[in-house]
Length: 165
Image (cartoon, rainbow, N blue to C red; front, side, top):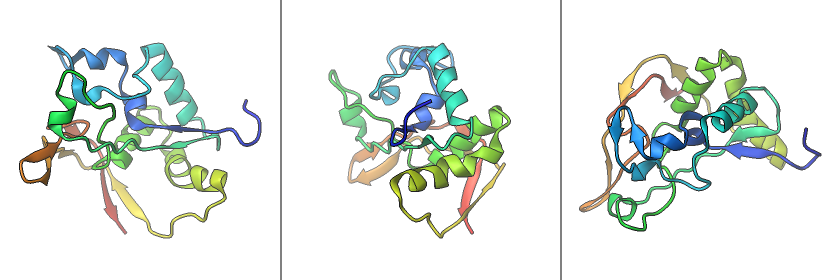
């Protein structure tokens, strides 16, 4: 229970991944630079605590997308940049987390209302519709000639689709 004026944003990668995802992911071993972010991914027990807090319905927690579009060459180097590129599907990935917890009814407040209320800002008037319609995340997005960014879940299925209403 935090005092007034204290809240926390939570990135989707911290809700989906634990620290093991840095070194092995879906049976593939080796360093996974596109999962490197700061703060560093946590132990599974800590990830579970974050998920419980995020899906609790408390107005003290809200979405905070990382949206770090570091190019592939800057991530895949000896001293790579921190951050996960989540912009292409942050909302859809948050939906996966909330669905897995049986808390889809808490998703709108977490992603759209709690942050605005905490900062005393108006809520956004635009709307999106989430549909349980899987799609495949592209392996990368070209950002300039010869430079690409690799999104979280590159080349993998995302269970939810979002479209403007």
